[in-house]
Structure formats: C-alpha cells, structure tokens
Image (cartoon, one colour):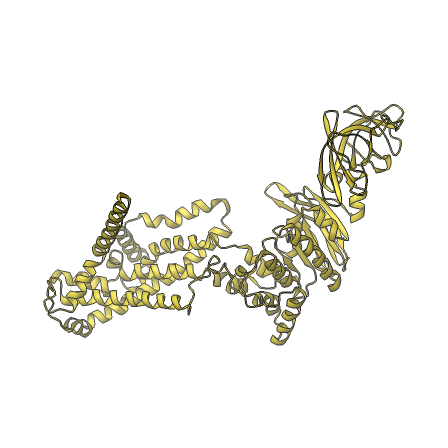
Length: 359
Length: 276
C-alpha cells in the first residue's frame, strides 16, 4: 500500500479522538473518510499531514516511516475547509509558495504555476489577492496550491463545505478528474455522504475515532456492515422487532410482520433498515389480494416533495412515518391517497441491537 | 420651520464643541510654539520673532548629549520590550492552554505598579544584587518592564485576529517553522509589532520617573528638562518642546501622505479591498 496507517491512535486528555486505526491506501485511490462531526476524521487527516502527532502507531508514506517527520518534510499537500490562502500574497504567489519551498528554479515555478492556472481556469486572476476572489475562486486557488507541487498525496479537509450546492457538484467532478489525471492518492474528509459517494473509490466510515468499515463505495451504500452505516449513508426507514418462533419473520414494534431474507434464531431482537428508494409503492385499491400481508404496509400519503427526477413521499403508517423516494417516471401519488408500501426482503438490511450483522 | 431651526442649532452646538475641544487640546502647544520663536517667550502676544532660542538649544551640547541618550534609551527599551512581548504573546496564544489567564495577569501586573516605585525598586535591585551602576543599560532594563506590559497588550489585540492555521498551511506546503514565521506570520503581524515598538519607544523616550533613579549621571531629555526647571523655564525648553512636536507632526504627515498615495500599506486589512 502506498499510504499505511498502522494502529494509529491520538489521545486528547482522556478522550481517544483516533482509536487504533489501521488502513492502507493505494497509489491511484480516491479515499473518503466519512463521518459525523467530532468523529475524529479530521484528526486522522492531520496525523497523515504531520500536523498532529499520533499517541501510538505509525504512518508510512511510499514505504517510508514518516511518523516522526514534521509536516514540511512529508511531501504531502492539503486543501483546507477555510481555504487558508495566504492573505498577503497574490494568487500566483500563493500557487508558487509550495514550489519556492521546494527550491525549484524560477523558470520551472512559472511553468508549473501556468499549468495549474490553466487546468483550474484561474486565468486573469493571477494578480489578485485572496480577499478579491469569490468563494469558488478561492477554492480553486486552494486546490491549485495543493496540486502544483505534485505531492505524494493530497489531503482534503471538507474542501467544499463552504460552497453552495451547484458549485459543489461542479467541483466534485473536477476534483475527481484531477485525481485520476495525476495518479496520486486523494484522501478526502467529509461529513457529506453525497460527496463521498460521488467521488470515492473507497469510503472509510469513521465513528468515535474508529473505522467502522473501509470498503468500495457501492458496498458501503448497498451492503452496510453495521447499523451505524445503514443509518448514516443514504436515507432509510428503520424498524425494531423480534424474530418469531419459526425464525422466518420479524414482528416489529409497530405491529407489522416482515419476512426475513434468511432464517434467524427465534426471539432474537433485531433492527431493520430499508433505503427510501427501495420502498415500492402501489395504489391501495383492493385489487392486490395480499395487500395487508407480510412486507406490505398500508399507508396514506401525507406529503409529496418534488426533487426533479425523483419524488419523495412522506407516508403515514399507523402512528409513525415512512419515507419513500420514487422516480417521476413511475405512477405519481397525491397527498391523502391510500398506498401499499412494499418491502422486498432482499432489500432489508438487518442488524442486532448492538449494530452488528447477526452471525 | 421649527425642525430646521432645531437642526441648525444642533449643528452649531456640535461645531462649537468641536472647536472648543481642539482649542483646549492644541492651545498650550500653540502657545509654546509661538513662545519658542519669540524674544518675549513668556508672553508672546504679539510675538517679537527670533530664532535665537533654537540657536541656544542646538548650541548647548548638554541637550545634544541628552537627546542622543534618550534616543538610545527609547530604542533599547522598545526593542527589548517588543521582542520579549512578541515571544510572550506567541506563547500565550499558542502554548499556554488553560493557564493563559494566569500568565496574562502576571505579564500585565507591572502596569499597576507606580512608575516611581518601579524606579526605586529597580535602583535597589540593580545596585544591591546585580552590582549594576546607574547608567543607560540599567535604565533600559527598568524601562523595559512596564514597556513590556504595554507592548504585550498592543500585540495581543492585533494577534488575536491572526489565524494560526495559516501556519499549518505553510508547513504542509514545505516551510520549516522558522521559514513559516518569516514567510507568513511576520508579514501579517508586523503592524502589531511596529505599533508596540512605536508606543514603547515614546514611553521610554519621555520617561522621567523610572529613568531618574537609574541613569546615574547620564543626562536624557526629560531629566535635563526637569533639572533646568529649577532655574525657571528657560527659552531652550520652549524650543525643545517645539522641536519634538515638529518631529512628531512631520512623522505623522509623512505616514499620512504615504497611505493616501498607496506608496506604503500599514498592515494587511482583509476588509479593505472587498469590492472588485
């Protein structure tokens, strides 16, 4: 592996902000560290950068143990959430900074700055100071400053959090393109699952300083390893219940019977998740004979939220709410309409009450 | 009609207050200025013009020596206080953690000690314990004490706004801690350092209470002026006051013109060039 974290921990007072993290990142990989705020993902990134020292464990970059190296000797670069451009320097001086620190000849510095100005469309802004740029332009300069030195790895700490939605989606595509063009690992910290899903090869879900799971983005989304991931990635409906005597069904607390994808021990307390877009809807007009059987929930549409290509339905089911998300190409339902929500057993993610997959 | 009358009355009152305030502030200075160019310096109305007072001032070698000593004292104490206070401020903001309040209290405690007491205490300390003679060096050291506290406060207000994560950014992009300080930190905080230096220089340059006890036989401008007072207010003192005032006004004028024409920028102000 190109970057290796080996049992890395970081303690603040009595709290372990990062707790025994071991992971390997390949040379051409785009990896996201995804987690809620305070989960330790930024600390982990700062440990890789050398801005924090791990309490225990080792960090290796390109086969070299850099645990005791200060940040300026690691050859990595970083893009910060607050941009942190040098306010007393112009755009081109900011871009030239890493190159000057590398003591490159002036001609090469000019050439590389021009290259970065080109790929990030910063032409015409070279003479401006950071406070004369818009947020999006500052973001581009910050990204350019990260790429210009051709670092061993680029670390990105929530770089898009301060941008508006449209700009963010534009930048997502761009960042991903630069990563594949340069062939260096990008490690991208975010609490935004959409950003992580849209760009990453692999996603490490961070929770309370530990790596909950580190897997391909499709696995993280489609086959969550723990209840925390099921809850955190994507939007889903959650049920709690107990496995019945036959071991094939779950009686949920809201009085529904759900069929299981695989048999389980009777009496087992479980939690189930189903993603909003996996909930299928049909009109409740009595034509469906088994309309109130297992995995078929009779609901009333409470509200419809249009999302362009999708419609989000808020459904009243007994005294709780369910959420469904359906493509607009399907039959549309109106507020107040009675519908049957169908849960395919294959689409249900099932966990113990402690969040693990039952063995 | 009533509205305009009230408004006009308000404007006049404001104008009168403004003029009176400025007169109150500047009349004594104008009076001394007039006196320094007049043969009848104690009551120069109308003045009988002369430049003799300045001739006598610049002809008096005691004043020249005193001026030079005051300059050394001012620069020495200000440089010492600024460097120490810069180190103290950086330490307070970056490394003090929860005890920052305690350290700050200790750092600014000298402000609450009367300067005369600082002077006498330093005299005793320097004389008895350090075996230090009364001279410029011991005066510089003693002056640096309260100058340090002022410098710390001035710098702290400036550095409070400094984003230390800029240092992180510089280091990640390959700058050593020393390089980071000179490339990023210093260019952004130097107005604070300069402000602290200027203020503490003026304090030490003009100081009498502390310096009086520690200078021994070394003359400085305040001590010479104080000594001269015993024989009445001499015309040289008028000229001295005017010369100092002229230097200050000239300095401010140059700074103002430089800033107006944009030849020099005193500090980086992010809020300035917002509009493009």
